[in-house]
Length: 450
Image (cartoon, rainbow, N blue to C red):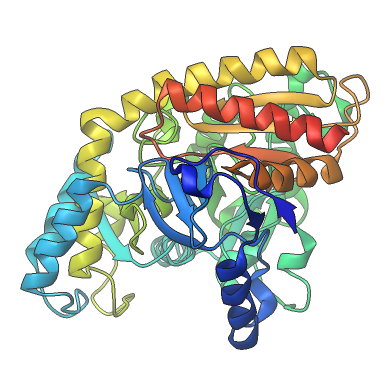
Protein backbone atom coordinates (compact mmCIF):
# COMPACT_ATOMS: atom_id res chain seq x y z
CA UNK A 1 0.00 0.00 0.00
CA UNK A 2 1.18 3.52 -0.80
CA UNK A 3 -0.20 7.00 -0.30
CA UNK A 4 -1.63 8.75 -3.31
CA UNK A 5 0.37 11.98 -3.59
CA UNK A 6 -1.08 13.83 -6.59
CA UNK A 7 -3.90 16.35 -6.20
CA UNK A 8 -6.92 15.12 -8.17
CA UNK A 9 -9.48 17.44 -9.67
CA UNK A 10 -11.91 16.62 -6.87
CA UNK A 11 -10.75 17.84 -3.46
CA UNK A 12 -12.80 15.13 -1.78
CA UNK A 13 -10.30 12.53 -2.99
CA UNK A 14 -7.07 14.46 -2.54
CA UNK A 15 -5.39 11.79 -0.41
CA UNK A 16 -5.94 8.08 -0.02
CA UNK A 17 -4.29 4.72 -0.12
CA UNK A 18 -3.61 3.08 -3.47
CA UNK A 19 -4.85 0.74 -4.50
CA UNK A 20 -8.00 1.91 -2.75
CA UNK A 21 -10.59 -0.47 -1.30
CA UNK A 22 -12.67 -0.76 -4.47
CA UNK A 23 -9.57 -1.34 -6.60
CA UNK A 24 -8.31 -3.98 -4.16
CA UNK A 25 -11.64 -5.78 -4.32
CA UNK A 26 -11.70 -5.77 -8.11
CA UNK A 27 -8.08 -6.95 -8.36
CA UNK A 28 -8.94 -9.84 -6.04
CA UNK A 29 -11.97 -10.76 -8.17
CA UNK A 30 -9.87 -10.49 -11.32
CA UNK A 31 -7.19 -12.84 -10.02
CA UNK A 32 -9.79 -15.53 -9.38
CA UNK A 33 -11.07 -15.65 -12.94
CA UNK A 34 -8.25 -14.49 -15.25
CA UNK A 35 -5.17 -16.45 -16.27
CA UNK A 36 -2.03 -14.72 -15.02
CA UNK A 37 -0.18 -14.92 -18.36
CA UNK A 38 -0.78 -11.26 -19.28
CA UNK A 39 1.09 -9.93 -16.25
CA UNK A 40 -0.28 -6.64 -14.93
CA UNK A 41 2.28 -3.94 -14.05
CA UNK A 42 0.54 -2.10 -11.19
CA UNK A 43 -2.96 -2.15 -9.65
CA UNK A 44 -4.64 0.61 -11.62
CA UNK A 45 -8.38 -0.06 -12.09
CA UNK A 46 -9.99 2.44 -14.45
CA UNK A 47 -13.49 3.79 -13.88
CA UNK A 48 -13.63 6.49 -16.58
CA UNK A 49 -11.48 8.65 -18.80
CA UNK A 50 -11.57 12.02 -20.52
CA UNK A 51 -8.88 13.33 -22.85
CA UNK A 52 -5.50 12.65 -21.23
CA UNK A 53 -6.94 11.95 -17.77
CA UNK A 54 -8.35 8.81 -16.21
CA UNK A 55 -9.97 8.13 -12.84
CA UNK A 56 -9.74 4.91 -10.91
CA UNK A 57 -12.65 3.28 -9.12
CA UNK A 58 -11.68 4.99 -5.86
CA UNK A 59 -11.75 8.47 -7.37
CA UNK A 60 -8.03 9.12 -7.86
CA UNK A 61 -7.20 11.11 -10.98
CA UNK A 62 -4.20 10.22 -13.18
CA UNK A 63 -2.49 11.84 -16.12
CA UNK A 64 -2.26 9.09 -18.73
CA UNK A 65 1.05 8.95 -20.60
CA UNK A 66 0.62 5.44 -21.96
CA UNK A 67 -2.80 5.68 -23.68
CA UNK A 68 -3.50 1.97 -23.29
CA UNK A 69 -0.15 1.18 -24.98
CA UNK A 70 -0.36 3.88 -27.66
CA UNK A 71 -3.97 2.98 -28.46
CA UNK A 72 -6.17 5.87 -27.30
CA UNK A 73 -4.89 8.21 -30.02
CA UNK A 74 -7.77 10.69 -29.82
CA UNK A 75 -7.84 10.66 -26.03
CA UNK A 76 -10.26 8.92 -23.73
CA UNK A 77 -13.91 9.14 -24.79
CA UNK A 78 -13.44 11.75 -27.50
CA UNK A 79 -16.90 13.25 -28.13
CA UNK A 80 -16.75 12.67 -31.88
CA UNK A 81 -15.82 9.03 -31.43
CA UNK A 82 -18.51 8.49 -28.82
CA UNK A 83 -21.14 10.02 -31.08
CA UNK A 84 -20.04 8.01 -34.13
CA UNK A 85 -20.09 4.75 -32.18
CA UNK A 86 -23.49 5.49 -30.62
CA UNK A 87 -25.04 6.37 -33.96
CA UNK A 88 -23.61 3.27 -35.62
CA UNK A 89 -24.76 1.00 -32.78
CA UNK A 90 -28.32 2.16 -33.40
CA UNK A 91 -28.03 1.11 -37.08
CA UNK A 92 -26.14 -2.18 -36.97
CA UNK A 93 -23.19 -3.52 -35.01
CA UNK A 94 -21.89 -6.31 -37.20
CA UNK A 95 -22.26 -7.94 -40.58
CA UNK A 96 -19.34 -10.12 -41.62
CA UNK A 97 -17.17 -8.11 -43.99
CA UNK A 98 -15.63 -11.32 -45.30
CA UNK A 99 -18.93 -12.28 -46.92
CA UNK A 100 -20.89 -9.06 -47.34
CA UNK A 101 -20.50 -5.30 -47.76
CA UNK A 102 -21.13 -2.26 -45.62
CA UNK A 103 -20.42 1.44 -46.01
CA UNK A 104 -18.41 2.01 -42.79
CA UNK A 105 -15.76 -0.48 -43.84
CA UNK A 106 -15.56 1.05 -47.31
CA UNK A 107 -15.19 4.53 -45.82
CA UNK A 108 -12.36 3.59 -43.51
CA UNK A 109 -10.55 1.72 -46.29
CA UNK A 110 -10.86 4.81 -48.49
CA UNK A 111 -9.30 6.87 -45.70
CA UNK A 112 -6.42 4.43 -45.32
CA UNK A 113 -5.74 4.30 -49.05
CA UNK A 114 -5.81 8.10 -49.26
CA UNK A 115 -3.18 8.30 -46.50
CA UNK A 116 -0.62 6.39 -48.54
CA UNK A 117 1.94 7.69 -51.06
CA UNK A 118 0.48 8.35 -54.51
CA UNK A 119 3.33 6.50 -56.23
CA UNK A 120 1.25 3.31 -56.08
CA UNK A 121 -2.35 2.17 -56.02
CA UNK A 122 -3.29 0.57 -52.69
CA UNK A 123 -5.85 -1.81 -51.23
CA UNK A 124 -6.82 -2.72 -47.69
CA UNK A 125 -7.53 -5.85 -45.67
CA UNK A 126 -9.27 -5.32 -42.31
CA UNK A 127 -8.81 -7.46 -39.21
CA UNK A 128 -8.94 -7.02 -35.44
CA UNK A 129 -5.46 -6.50 -34.00
CA UNK A 130 -1.81 -5.83 -34.70
CA UNK A 131 -0.94 -9.50 -34.50
CA UNK A 132 -3.55 -10.31 -37.13
CA UNK A 133 -2.32 -7.48 -39.34
CA UNK A 134 1.23 -8.84 -39.22
CA UNK A 135 -0.04 -12.34 -39.97
CA UNK A 136 -1.97 -11.02 -42.95
CA UNK A 137 1.02 -9.07 -44.25
CA UNK A 138 3.32 -12.06 -44.05
CA UNK A 139 0.74 -14.37 -45.63
CA UNK A 140 0.29 -11.94 -48.51
CA UNK A 141 4.06 -11.64 -49.01
CA UNK A 142 4.54 -15.41 -49.06
CA UNK A 143 1.52 -15.89 -51.30
CA UNK A 144 2.54 -13.46 -54.04
CA UNK A 145 6.30 -14.11 -54.03
CA UNK A 146 6.02 -17.90 -53.68
CA UNK A 147 8.90 -17.63 -51.20
CA UNK A 148 8.95 -18.70 -47.55
CA UNK A 149 11.71 -16.78 -45.78
CA UNK A 150 10.95 -13.73 -43.63
CA UNK A 151 13.56 -11.49 -41.99
CA UNK A 152 12.79 -9.52 -38.85
CA UNK A 153 15.03 -7.80 -36.30
CA UNK A 154 16.36 -8.46 -32.84
CA UNK A 155 14.42 -6.33 -30.37
CA UNK A 156 11.32 -6.41 -32.55
CA UNK A 157 7.78 -7.02 -31.36
CA UNK A 158 5.21 -8.08 -33.94
CA UNK A 159 2.66 -10.00 -31.89
CA UNK A 160 2.05 -13.22 -29.99
CA UNK A 161 0.32 -15.64 -32.39
CA UNK A 162 2.64 -18.25 -33.84
CA UNK A 163 3.49 -16.45 -37.07
CA UNK A 164 3.97 -13.04 -35.50
CA UNK A 165 5.69 -14.52 -32.43
CA UNK A 166 8.23 -16.14 -34.73
CA UNK A 167 9.20 -12.62 -35.83
CA UNK A 168 9.08 -11.16 -32.31
CA UNK A 169 12.49 -10.99 -30.62
CA UNK A 170 11.95 -8.56 -27.78
CA UNK A 171 12.01 -10.56 -24.51
CA UNK A 172 12.69 -14.27 -23.91
CA UNK A 173 9.55 -14.68 -21.77
CA UNK A 174 7.45 -14.04 -24.88
CA UNK A 175 8.88 -17.14 -26.59
CA UNK A 176 9.62 -19.40 -23.64
CA UNK A 177 7.64 -22.63 -23.78
CA UNK A 178 6.34 -22.15 -27.32
CA UNK A 179 8.95 -23.78 -29.54
CA UNK A 180 9.09 -24.86 -32.31
CA UNK A 181 8.01 -21.64 -33.98
CA UNK A 182 7.22 -21.06 -37.64
CA UNK A 183 10.17 -22.11 -39.82
CA UNK A 184 11.75 -19.81 -42.36
CA UNK A 185 12.13 -16.81 -40.03
CA UNK A 186 15.47 -15.07 -39.54
CA UNK A 187 16.66 -12.15 -37.43
CA UNK A 188 19.05 -9.36 -38.25
CA UNK A 189 20.36 -6.41 -36.21
CA UNK A 190 18.38 -3.19 -35.85
CA UNK A 191 20.41 -0.03 -36.41
CA UNK A 192 20.40 1.25 -32.83
CA UNK A 193 22.50 4.43 -32.77
CA UNK A 194 22.69 4.53 -28.94
CA UNK A 195 23.88 0.94 -28.66
CA UNK A 196 25.60 0.25 -32.00
CA UNK A 197 26.22 -3.35 -33.01
CA UNK A 198 29.60 -4.69 -31.80
CA UNK A 199 30.45 -1.18 -30.52
CA UNK A 200 31.22 0.00 -34.04
CA UNK A 201 31.64 3.67 -34.79
CA UNK A 202 28.13 5.17 -34.46
CA UNK A 203 28.51 6.68 -37.93
CA UNK A 204 28.79 3.13 -39.35
CA UNK A 205 25.92 1.45 -37.53
CA UNK A 206 23.61 1.56 -40.55
CA UNK A 207 26.28 0.21 -42.87
CA UNK A 208 27.17 -2.59 -40.44
CA UNK A 209 23.58 -3.73 -39.95
CA UNK A 210 22.76 -3.66 -43.65
CA UNK A 211 25.97 -5.52 -44.52
CA UNK A 212 25.03 -8.24 -42.05
CA UNK A 213 21.85 -8.92 -44.01
CA UNK A 214 23.35 -8.78 -47.46
CA UNK A 215 26.77 -10.31 -46.83
CA UNK A 216 26.12 -12.70 -43.94
CA UNK A 217 22.48 -13.80 -43.82
CA UNK A 218 22.13 -13.99 -47.60
CA UNK A 219 25.38 -15.95 -47.95
CA UNK A 220 24.77 -18.43 -45.14
CA UNK A 221 21.25 -19.35 -44.00
CA UNK A 222 18.78 -17.09 -45.86
CA UNK A 223 19.34 -17.12 -49.61
CA UNK A 224 17.64 -13.98 -50.95
CA UNK A 225 15.84 -15.94 -53.67
CA UNK A 226 13.93 -17.65 -50.85
CA UNK A 227 13.14 -14.50 -48.81
CA UNK A 228 9.60 -13.17 -49.22
CA UNK A 229 9.77 -10.11 -46.96
CA UNK A 230 11.71 -8.01 -44.53
CA UNK A 231 9.46 -6.92 -41.65
CA UNK A 232 10.59 -3.81 -39.78
CA UNK A 233 9.26 -1.29 -37.28
CA UNK A 234 10.19 2.22 -38.48
CA UNK A 235 10.62 2.91 -34.75
CA UNK A 236 11.03 -0.14 -32.54
CA UNK A 237 8.32 -0.23 -29.90
CA UNK A 238 8.69 -2.94 -27.26
CA UNK A 239 12.40 -3.06 -28.07
CA UNK A 240 12.91 0.34 -26.45
CA UNK A 241 11.36 3.08 -28.62
CA UNK A 242 14.45 3.10 -30.80
CA UNK A 243 14.69 5.44 -33.78
CA UNK A 244 17.00 3.76 -36.30
CA UNK A 245 20.22 5.36 -37.44
CA UNK A 246 19.96 7.55 -40.56
CA UNK A 247 19.75 5.65 -43.82
CA UNK A 248 18.67 2.34 -42.31
CA UNK A 249 15.16 2.28 -43.75
CA UNK A 250 16.39 3.47 -47.16
CA UNK A 251 19.04 0.77 -47.11
CA UNK A 252 16.42 -1.90 -46.41
CA UNK A 253 14.33 -0.58 -49.29
CA UNK A 254 17.34 -0.85 -51.61
CA UNK A 255 18.10 -4.40 -50.50
CA UNK A 256 14.49 -5.40 -51.08
CA UNK A 257 14.51 -3.85 -54.54
CA UNK A 258 17.73 -5.62 -55.50
CA UNK A 259 16.46 -9.07 -54.60
CA UNK A 260 12.72 -8.87 -55.28
CA UNK A 261 11.87 -8.92 -51.57
CA UNK A 262 8.83 -7.11 -50.15
CA UNK A 263 9.29 -4.50 -47.42
CA UNK A 264 6.66 -4.67 -44.67
CA UNK A 265 6.51 -1.68 -42.32
CA UNK A 266 4.97 -2.63 -38.98
CA UNK A 267 3.25 0.62 -38.00
CA UNK A 268 1.05 -0.94 -35.32
CA UNK A 269 2.56 1.25 -32.60
CA UNK A 270 4.19 4.05 -34.60
CA UNK A 271 1.40 4.83 -37.08
CA UNK A 272 -1.77 6.91 -37.19
CA UNK A 273 -0.23 10.27 -36.34
CA UNK A 274 1.85 9.24 -33.35
CA UNK A 275 5.15 10.49 -34.75
CA UNK A 276 3.75 13.72 -36.21
CA UNK A 277 3.05 12.16 -39.60
CA UNK A 278 0.29 9.71 -40.40
CA UNK A 279 2.96 7.01 -40.80
CA UNK A 280 6.45 6.86 -39.32
CA UNK A 281 7.95 5.65 -42.59
CA UNK A 282 7.22 9.09 -44.03
CA UNK A 283 10.06 10.52 -41.93
CA UNK A 284 12.49 8.28 -43.81
CA UNK A 285 11.33 9.06 -47.34
CA UNK A 286 10.68 5.35 -47.92
CA UNK A 287 7.60 3.64 -49.35
CA UNK A 288 6.95 0.08 -48.08
CA UNK A 289 5.10 -2.55 -50.06
CA UNK A 290 2.83 -3.48 -47.16
CA UNK A 291 1.94 -1.50 -44.03
CA UNK A 292 0.42 -3.06 -40.90
CA UNK A 293 -1.73 -0.96 -38.58
CA UNK A 294 -3.75 -1.38 -35.37
CA UNK A 295 -3.52 0.14 -31.85
CA UNK A 296 -4.21 3.86 -32.42
CA UNK A 297 -6.19 3.10 -35.57
CA UNK A 298 -9.35 2.33 -33.61
CA UNK A 299 -8.73 4.78 -30.80
CA UNK A 300 -9.57 2.04 -28.31
CA UNK A 301 -11.95 -0.06 -30.40
CA UNK A 302 -10.29 -3.28 -31.65
CA UNK A 303 -9.33 -3.04 -35.32
CA UNK A 304 -6.33 -3.87 -37.46
CA UNK A 305 -5.49 -3.43 -41.10
CA UNK A 306 -2.92 -3.92 -43.78
CA UNK A 307 -2.54 -1.44 -46.61
CA UNK A 308 -0.69 -3.01 -49.52
CA UNK A 309 0.20 -2.22 -53.11
CA UNK A 310 -2.70 -3.16 -55.34
CA UNK A 311 -0.47 -5.11 -57.71
CA UNK A 312 0.11 -7.47 -54.77
CA UNK A 313 -3.41 -7.67 -53.35
CA UNK A 314 -5.03 -8.26 -56.74
CA UNK A 315 -3.15 -11.57 -56.82
CA UNK A 316 -4.74 -12.64 -53.52
CA UNK A 317 -7.51 -14.93 -54.72
CA UNK A 318 -10.93 -14.92 -53.01
CA UNK A 319 -10.91 -17.24 -50.01
CA UNK A 320 -7.13 -17.04 -49.58
CA UNK A 321 -7.48 -15.12 -46.34
CA UNK A 322 -10.29 -13.79 -44.16
CA UNK A 323 -11.76 -13.43 -40.69
CA UNK A 324 -15.11 -12.97 -39.00
CA UNK A 325 -14.90 -9.52 -37.43
CA UNK A 326 -12.91 -7.55 -40.02
CA UNK A 327 -15.15 -4.72 -41.21
CA UNK A 328 -17.14 -4.59 -37.98
CA UNK A 329 -19.40 -1.54 -38.08
CA UNK A 330 -18.49 -0.09 -34.68
CA UNK A 331 -14.76 -0.57 -35.23
CA UNK A 332 -14.87 1.00 -38.69
CA UNK A 333 -16.73 4.17 -37.72
CA UNK A 334 -14.38 4.59 -34.76
CA UNK A 335 -11.32 4.21 -37.00
CA UNK A 336 -12.75 6.60 -39.59
CA UNK A 337 -13.22 9.24 -36.89
CA UNK A 338 -9.69 8.72 -35.55
CA UNK A 339 -8.18 9.04 -39.03
CA UNK A 340 -10.19 12.21 -39.64
CA UNK A 341 -9.04 13.74 -36.35
CA UNK A 342 -5.42 12.83 -37.09
CA UNK A 343 -5.64 14.49 -40.51
CA UNK A 344 -7.33 17.59 -39.14
CA UNK A 345 -5.25 18.27 -36.03
CA UNK A 346 -3.79 15.38 -34.07
CA UNK A 347 -0.71 14.65 -36.21
CA UNK A 348 0.24 18.32 -36.13
CA UNK A 349 -0.35 18.44 -32.38
CA UNK A 350 1.78 15.34 -31.88
CA UNK A 351 4.63 17.01 -33.75
CA UNK A 352 4.41 20.32 -31.86
CA UNK A 353 3.74 19.03 -28.35
CA UNK A 354 6.10 16.11 -28.94
CA UNK A 355 8.95 18.53 -29.66
CA UNK A 356 8.15 20.36 -26.44
CA UNK A 357 8.05 17.14 -24.40
CA UNK A 358 11.28 15.97 -26.00
CA UNK A 359 13.02 19.23 -25.07
CA UNK A 360 11.76 19.02 -21.50
CA UNK A 361 13.15 15.48 -21.26
CA UNK A 362 16.50 16.52 -22.75
CA UNK A 363 16.69 19.26 -20.13
CA UNK A 364 16.03 16.65 -17.44
CA UNK A 365 18.78 14.44 -18.86
CA UNK A 366 21.29 17.24 -18.35
CA UNK A 367 20.54 17.16 -14.60
CA UNK A 368 20.38 13.41 -14.03
CA UNK A 369 23.29 11.13 -14.92
CA UNK A 370 20.96 8.12 -14.82
CA UNK A 371 19.15 9.23 -17.99
CA UNK A 372 21.23 7.79 -20.78
CA UNK A 373 19.23 8.65 -23.85
CA UNK A 374 16.11 10.53 -24.90
CA UNK A 375 14.85 9.67 -28.37
CA UNK A 376 11.76 9.52 -30.49
CA UNK A 377 9.52 11.36 -32.89
CA UNK A 378 6.32 13.20 -32.14
CA UNK A 379 4.59 11.67 -29.13
CA UNK A 380 6.54 8.41 -29.35
CA UNK A 381 9.44 9.08 -27.00
CA UNK A 382 11.74 6.72 -25.15
CA UNK A 383 13.73 7.67 -22.03
CA UNK A 384 16.44 5.10 -21.36
CA UNK A 385 17.79 4.76 -17.83
CA UNK A 386 21.37 3.69 -17.16
CA UNK A 387 23.72 3.36 -14.21
CA UNK A 388 25.57 6.38 -15.58
CA UNK A 389 25.90 8.14 -18.90
CA UNK A 390 29.53 7.09 -19.33
CA UNK A 391 29.16 3.31 -19.17
CA UNK A 392 25.57 3.23 -20.47
CA UNK A 393 24.93 0.04 -18.48
CA UNK A 394 21.14 -0.52 -18.39
CA UNK A 395 19.30 0.14 -15.13
CA UNK A 396 16.07 -1.89 -15.43
CA UNK A 397 15.26 -1.77 -11.71
CA UNK A 398 15.44 2.02 -11.74
CA UNK A 399 13.06 2.26 -14.72
CA UNK A 400 10.66 -0.11 -12.98
CA UNK A 401 10.75 1.87 -9.75
CA UNK A 402 10.16 5.16 -11.56
CA UNK A 403 7.09 3.67 -13.23
CA UNK A 404 5.76 2.46 -9.87
CA UNK A 405 6.44 5.73 -8.05
CA UNK A 406 4.84 7.68 -10.90
CA UNK A 407 1.69 5.64 -10.35
CA UNK A 408 1.56 6.68 -6.69
CA UNK A 409 1.91 10.32 -7.79
CA UNK A 410 -0.82 10.18 -10.43
CA UNK A 411 1.10 9.60 -13.67
CA UNK A 412 0.59 6.43 -15.71
CA UNK A 413 3.74 5.17 -17.45
CA UNK A 414 4.95 1.93 -19.01
CA UNK A 415 8.42 0.55 -19.59
CA UNK A 416 9.83 -1.12 -22.70
CA UNK A 417 13.15 -2.55 -23.81
CA UNK A 418 15.73 -3.31 -21.13
CA UNK A 419 15.44 -0.09 -19.13
CA UNK A 420 13.39 2.44 -21.08
CA UNK A 421 10.25 4.30 -20.10
CA UNK A 422 8.03 4.94 -23.08
CA UNK A 423 6.03 8.12 -23.42
CA UNK A 424 3.05 7.51 -25.70
CA UNK A 425 0.24 9.74 -24.39
CA UNK A 426 -2.97 10.49 -26.28
CA UNK A 427 -2.30 12.75 -29.25
CA UNK A 428 -4.52 15.44 -27.70
CA UNK A 429 -1.83 16.14 -25.08
CA UNK A 430 -1.28 19.86 -24.38
CA UNK A 431 1.87 21.72 -23.32
CA UNK A 432 0.23 22.43 -19.96
CA UNK A 433 -0.23 18.68 -19.50
CA UNK A 434 3.41 18.18 -20.44
CA UNK A 435 4.42 20.59 -17.68
CA UNK A 436 2.17 18.81 -15.19
CA UNK A 437 3.50 15.42 -16.20
CA UNK A 438 7.13 16.51 -16.04
CA UNK A 439 6.71 17.61 -12.42
CA UNK A 440 5.28 14.21 -11.57
CA UNK A 441 7.94 12.40 -13.61
CA UNK A 442 10.84 14.17 -11.91
CA UNK A 443 9.29 13.62 -8.48
CA UNK A 444 8.94 9.89 -9.26
CA UNK A 445 12.57 9.84 -10.44
CA UNK A 446 13.69 11.41 -7.17
CA UNK A 447 11.57 8.93 -5.22
CA UNK A 448 13.20 6.04 -7.07
CA UNK A 449 16.73 7.38 -6.59
CA UNK A 450 16.04 7.87 -2.88
